[in-house]
Amino acid sequence: MSKKFKVTQLKSLIGCSHTQRATMEALGLRKRHKSVVVSDNPANRGQILKIQHLVQVEVVR
Image (cartoon, rainbow, N blue to C red; front, side, top):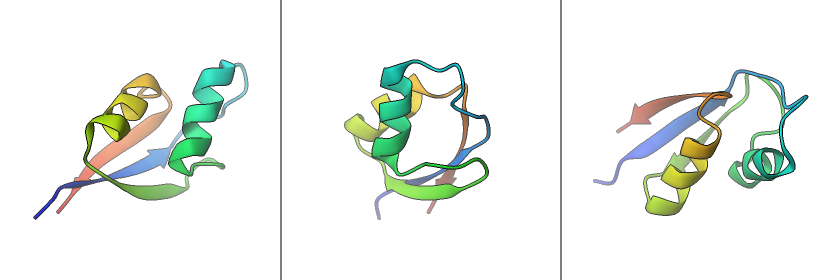
């Protein structure tokens, strides 16, 4: 059974770089306190690592 991550946006994108904004949009996060479930793969891990100061990550089984 593959792991999944529940990613919740906690902070606003005001003042963030263009690449961080693009990463948030690629993950499907557009508003604060909204969540998405993404699969555990190297690409998604890299995206989460880039915006880790803006989101909360939980492991979903």
